[in-house]
Length: 299
Image (cartoon, rainbow, N blue to C red; front, side, top):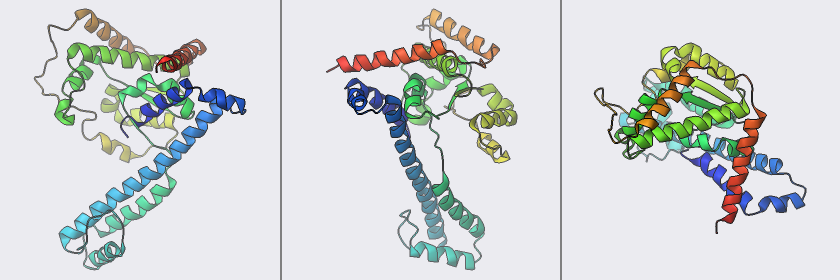
């Protein structure tokens, strides 16, 4: 999904800045009604195409397996055509060792594509757009994964090892980016409370995985399954940082480093508030409206 949701939020701001809400207001359509309707349409569209994409990827894997075993002679298209269906049957008759798993996977994919009710996306940029995203998706839930700043900085500086591009230019920029995103998430926690924004410690996720996942799934309203732990069998969100890598650039402003480390320690030692703040929510709303006015002034 990449930055899809962020771009949606920005488009929402741009539309508001260009006066669309004044037109809707004249028709008796409220801002909240309009935005939530757009959000529901986007949600349905994403769910449908995500299910189709998952099914397509599975069929491609099946076709490649059958082609490798000599049961399928057609092109790898991702479409479950008659030739693919016949190859699956022949594979089963021949006693293919993965036949039952293959059929179960195809059945599950067909069912899931019709019954998916939510989608998940991740990118640090969401931290800055939670107010706007909540307007489009009023029932959206946000997970704030907290990790010590030192580990995050080292990961950002080695991001190019897995992505091929640099996430930040230098160590100081990494510390500043961490400060901006974390502060934005903390403000959202304060504004909307633990029913909308959930703080999850990275250390708990990798060190006490089962209780951490149970608590997270309770927040999401989803049942726990032991299979959830399988995704944590390998290091998550890793930039393959070399063991001997050190992030101690002498050009980095020491005041920025100290500020980030102090905030990181404070978060690790404190718990998320059980309440939400109307004042904090009003502050985010005011910032959002200010952004709209700014966009309206840009020609």
